[in-house]
Image (tube, rainbow, N blue to C red; front, side, top):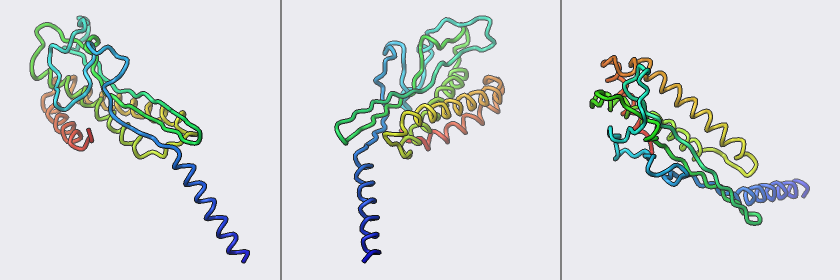
Length: 195
C-alpha cells in the first residue's frame, strides 16, 4: 500500500508539473513591424533582391570598398501574464539599412551587386539560425530573460564571423573563383532556410 501511495504521489507531481508548464506558451514568428523607419529599411525576402537604388548612404571615398551593405537582424519580445497563464511573443526580423549602405560612383556593376546581396543573405542565414533555435528551445517564464540576449549574441557573433570569412576569402569580391564558391555555399544554405 505504501508503494502505491508513493506511485500516486509521483503521478500527481508529474501532472502538476505538466499543468504548470502548459500555462506558459511561447510564439516565435517573422515580422516586418519594427521601430526602424519604413522608408529607410528593407526586410529580407527571397523574392526581393537588392537593387543599386537601395544604396542611399554617402560613400566613404577613403574606403577601399566599392560598396558597403549595412544589414543585420534583431528581435522584439513581448511577455504577457494573466493569472497562472503567460505568453511570450518573439518577433524576429532581418533588415538592410538604405541610409547606411552605399556604393561609389562608377561601381554599380551586377558583379558587385551580387557580392553585396550575399552579405544580406548571410545576415538572413544568421537570423534563420536564431529563429530555429528559438523554436526548439525550452523557454520558460524563469529563463527567457537571460536566454534571449545570450542566444542573440551567439548568433550575431556567428554572422560577423561568416561575414569576415566571406570578405576575407573573396578579397571583398575581387577573387572571382572564391566569389563563385561562396555564391554556391550561400545558395545551398538558403535552400535549407525556413522562411
